[in-house]
Amino acid sequence: MTRLTIRRGGTKRVRATFFADQSAGIARDLSGLTLILVDQSPNIAPPALAILPPATSGQIEVLWTDEQTAPLAPGAGKVWLTLGFENDSGEREVLPTLTFDVE
View (tube, rainbow, N blue to C red):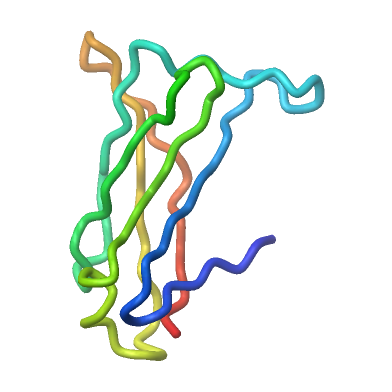
């Protein structure tokens, strides 16, 4: 398990790759999908979300800026974020919740 941390007043960029077949190293094709914020911790502004080009590489990015993280109190518990994908038909796939410690 990877420990994810947000430092007060610092940019936090999280990138992830989604796989259609992880053991074979085949990235999931995210073409035609939109990355959406389903729910999040109320103590921080929503991050910028992006599917990184090319969408066939299966990579996403979550980005909080210095200004967004500055108001966080150190040791103030967790910041959590639930993301999902949505297609043109409005069908959603919700991803596991990400949790970050505040330092």
